[in-house]
Image 1 (spheres, rainbow, N blue to C red):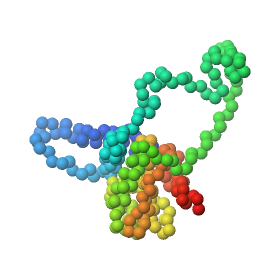
Image 2 (cartoon, one colour):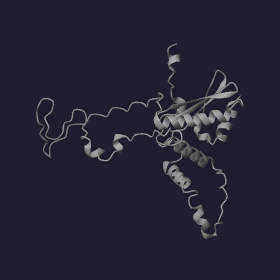
Image 3 (cartoon, rainbow, N blue to C red):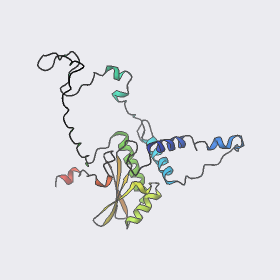
Image 4 (cartoon, rainbow, N blue to C red):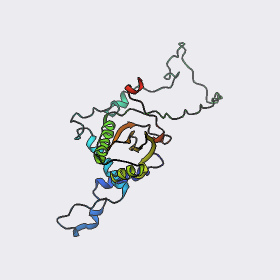
Length: 243
């Protein structure tokens, strides 16, 4: 993940702890636990609250989840049993399987063990990472839409006059400050991007104050440490691009 995110093992351990309802707290009580236990207290740590929120949205958008419409998601070919056995061997450009003729009809002959290997060409420099917006589809689109819905409803008609007010309201919605990034104002209105990329995801929210509420736009950002959500170039809508 990016440098502003906790290490993946920490995130995974926290999610497992949440799934196990306290990660050992009940075992510590042992036989001294009361027969009827009240609802657990609210989690005070911002990162754990964010993990709970992320887990809740992912569960809602999972196949056959409440926001999936009961349609489910068909498995990918690589998830099917025997896919690897049925896949043809992969060869690089210009390479041929052992013993197969090349493009000119010649069968390559392997070099003797003591033959001098040809000099390797200098590797080409890696191209810079793309800063263009990427599309959201399937579960990721559902995740972006669900986060956008809860932000839009929470802001309601309360008004957002400043960047500080916007950030305070977003943190009150369990988004930690590390995922909230200030953007240049749009027509004098404060604007932020909420980085929802998690474990290889791409979802980001763009939140802009508008009138008494906010405009919330989910979009996709490349999942790479070299790309900050503040640098991603949004794709203009078709109507704006035609102007």
